Length: 474
Image (cartoon, rainbow, N blue to C red; front, side, top):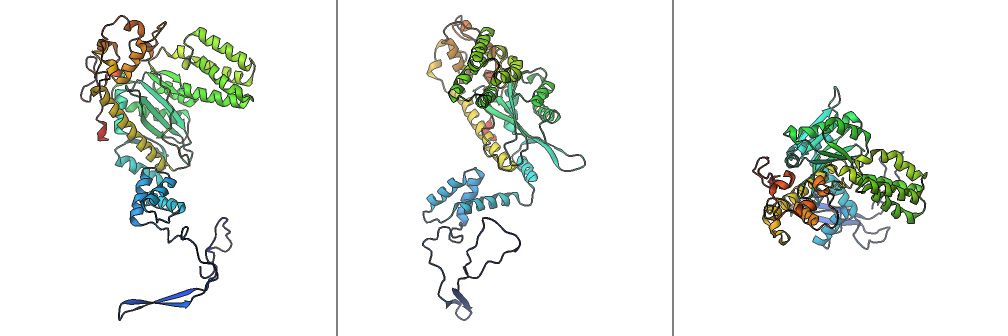
């Protein structure tokens, strides 16, 4: 605390900063003597102009991290542990630890910079993609090395996409990095009921040409032309909708019911002051979206009009924004396609919108690996674990060949009471209740190939079940 603070730039005033220097007169002098190899410590002046400290917590030197603690923090940074939890882990390992949260933040930044070295953020990101074996594609600005767009996909995700290309969900967001660069996420559906990320793409904008380029790279991941997706699910983004129509002309295009419900709920809160009505309006809108016939849809719309008013702002919003596309999201209309109930909530793995692109990629990478492990475990469970529920003769041809998720859907359909409607047969390509009633044993051919891809060696054909990836190699 000796001496006085001398600012580096006297004119510059930094708010929120301070100094420990208070012109304390305390002085020590140390001298090394070569004769005996010892240090001599002399107190030149022993008085202070301040009170002695009661604790060393908050003093930078006392709270510095040891080399072992730095390694520990580095591993936690790589696994995206929150700084508060890092500090708790350090203090659990050493109760005498005097480190503060600020020192943890500083060490975290030091670790990130040390890994990057002299590379720029984009160069480091592309190096990470190359080290982990990702398939990647980038586009640069004309006559420049500046990256305009970047697309990448994990090798195991590519295998999964070639085995399960039936349904693809697309969503674009700009809240995953501090630069607000749009990120396009592409998600598929497996036979075990889990979603998997196919690929991601950073785009310079969300206009149709840029989105189309990203979807063309997605299409290029497929090995066979006949394996094109049958259903594409998006939100109501005009550029994305047009790009889907251009790139995948044979696929049915649907709108995500989750996004629509979210938009209607937000509009409801803006236009209706009575908070007690919000849940009633949400339930009424769900009744419209999940109508199983045109009659139920019309009845649901009549109930919604009576609830909010024919000419209310909310009703006008629904009429102008969503009803022109009702054939893309209302249940009775979309049940003509094998969509498997796909309306997943995307972007779950990226929760920090203030990080850089490398940190966002690290979150995506770890989420992807966890997905692969979970899917692989479900594959093995479908092959080797025989659930007691499916021991009856009806499932003799399916056990160990068809995924347990598909068997559960069949079992649920078997217990259906009332009119069948054959919805499960259209949306999942599985036997519906009316056909199950005529079967003593379900033939394997009654189950779509999508639900039979559980082996790792067979080639896709109609006589043999296909796939089950050796995902552990990723």
